[in-house]
Length: 297
Image (cartoon, rainbow, N blue to C red; front, side, top):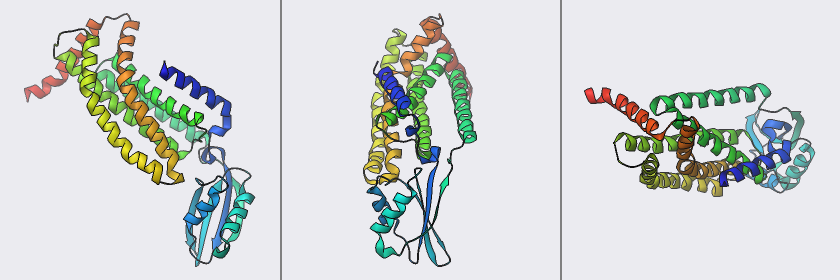
């Protein structure tokens, strides 16, 4: 119920915010180009922009013809505000405005469509691989857990009034990889328990297998969170949203690998009208078939 509530709340917030969910990379914005006779301190520029709420603006630096140039990318209709703020905050830098223009989104429709196709093919690949190595019910559970993690992460960004940008897209793909890896580790221990011929119901064996991997799962997640939290607190405004997305994804991914993926396996098995005995037999047969070539060597 907690997951459903978070997904619904995130979807509602995402719908209400509309275009405000997307950053400059998706919506386009203003591009301001400035020059100075000496090297421009990017840290000072970012500090100046933080006063008007653009601390995470994209800033590029270059050298040409003995001059130092910076290019600042900010939301639409903010170029004049940005120019004025930088000039007033850095009077001794000798800055000159070379020009400003409105630019389109970095993520066009074609790229967004290609990304969705790639994500769909990735999910299909996961379904095929997990079905081959385990069983279809396990593949469905892994896919649901992956989508659960991605949707909650994006929903939390909407609830926290954060914008989606290109780094966040990378963070979401990282979360997807982490989620499926953590789930497969739990599944592998469940398969070992089922194939070992251990007595007890499939529910009990799954529960015991999850408990056996619980310490490993929590330690892995904890060790992952330590550097990401450092990045969040000390990495600056540019990396803060990226780190936040990874933090949310790791926490939610740990939760889903324990409480979402395995129950979905049982639910899907029963929804198809199959018994847990048949599931156990098929998993055992696949485990034996996979292990037999190694046993013959």
